[in-house]
Image 1 (spheres, rainbow, N blue to C red):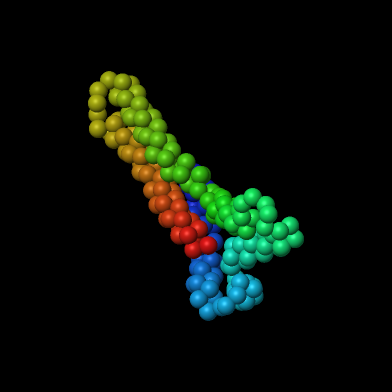
Image 2 (tube, one colour):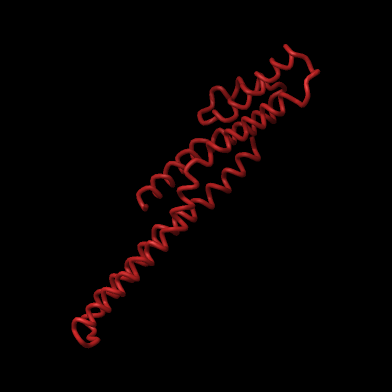
Length: 176
């Protein structure tokens, strides 16, 4: 669980770092340009701007469809296309978050299972010795506590990363 968790955390961090310059540039480009075509052209040369370029392409395709078929159809095809693209991008940005949430919520219970197992091992050692001697109890109880710590060590980064990723995804969706 820990390896999967850290793989997802590092992948999400790398994606976020790759998009940061594009986010700043997209904000500047929107403020400085007069037309969507000019904004798209300027963002073409920006690494990490794929999400914005995908929105431009889908919006342009919907506008072309509207020009060919006329405005007599129900709804706004441009708004529908952009909404669909935003939903698709949101799903892409959310990939891996379910695994992080699952790891964050189950790892403490796996640690707890190890704790229960360790305490049961200590009780078996006490029963075999016939008395509660510290040397028979300390080892298994120590192992049990280490299992609890491992469970928390896996869960805490996963939960923190999940929270950071969901917040980042909401902010990015709002900017798009």
